[in-house]
Length: 155
Image (tube, rainbow, N blue to C red; front, top):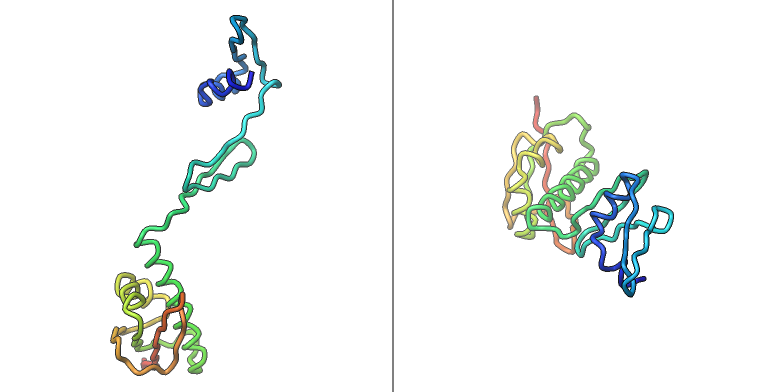
């Protein structure tokens, strides 16, 4: 029975069961009918995906990160680090700043590729990237050092 069921097309069986139909299998030359209560339908993720389902709906998420997603995640961590540096510098939440970032080239690349996002989130009127910049604050992001210098810009 197990090998007969394994040989069925899962999508076709699911569609038949959802439509209220029955599924037939053949074992040793004899036909048998499987009704919906005879089957348990379950979803198994394809390699590299996580699947969650509820109330008959399922969502599959790709778990592999490409370079763009990694840089976007780093940019978000940079924003968090700069916000902490702003706070430590005693700046108000509405203060516009001049921002200089230095340190790890990979972090600077992420900041450059997401320059507009980083600048908008931290209210930077200007942002410069200088790997040799002297830091006013430092942060470690995924084991990489980020040097941060912020200064308030007068309105």
